[in-house]
Length: 379
Image 1 (cartoon, helix red, strand yellow):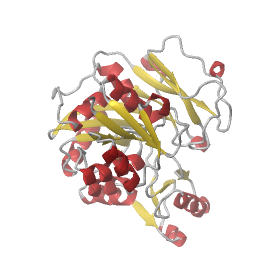
Image 2 (tube, rainbow, N blue to C red; image 1 turned 30 degrees about the horizontal axis):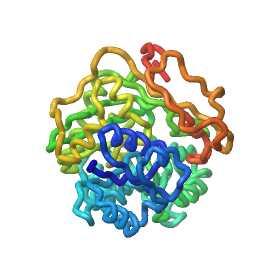
Image 3 (cartoon, rainbow, N blue to C red; image 1 turned 90 degrees about the vertical axis):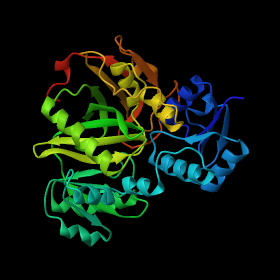
């Protein structure tokens, strides 16, 4: 009988994991509180269960004698993955303590500042009047523990600050917010995979983002980075390595979001999982190695290659999102597939309603392609 995996969540991010595990010959069970998600039809069995319900998820795992419980691209799902896997003595990368640290933005910022890595000024806001402690602008206001760009806002003056804090608190499960220095510079990411204490993947990418009312929402990603120099790339990789050591990571993936500022490379956030932007696919085109498959190999203690990943050539690769306004009906003709696309995927079929995720620009598809370096210079 095939090995069985229970995947928490069945949205577009989990679809990558669902399809990959099927290709690897696994029996795939999915669970989510929504039966209309894109990944449901690709599972072998589906349960309409809230993935935050640890008892219910654990029962599914026990009843189906699963070998693995896992998820990608979701902070909420990873919390449940760790709790259920620990409870049932199934393979897992991280402790609940580490998950809590990376999930809480002020705790992570405090941890980094205390070890003199990526020092950034910040204040935690519990009561609204706590925002009076902050007087440096522009700044960033964000929920303490929400995923993505929900509730995140660049604030230019004191007049905007309180309303931004009120909004951010609404997206935080503990009703707190963080105000911190605005980091001005090129946004970069690093997808890290650690195997037996050794960093195997540490691929840098440049994150293209919108500004103004769409602040922080990604347009796409580039490998290699275009708008930072080689010295900055080296310092970014060094920072990542030092943080991995400080966190005492032995096995597992991490997703670093950073800014290359005039004061050095600074960390924005660290997630204990694969990103939600399908970056593994861009990395695969740039390196000929699958970050996703190798993550599963590490989790199962069956990792094949300890050789550090390198770019396969001198070409430039882009992953670009196709966006729509929310609350519209999807029509393919509005989002043509580029003729030079190496890979393309729609998140919807014709006539389907576009879900509200961030309420501003919703991803309806994405593609991977090669591009000339000057296309994104000074973006």
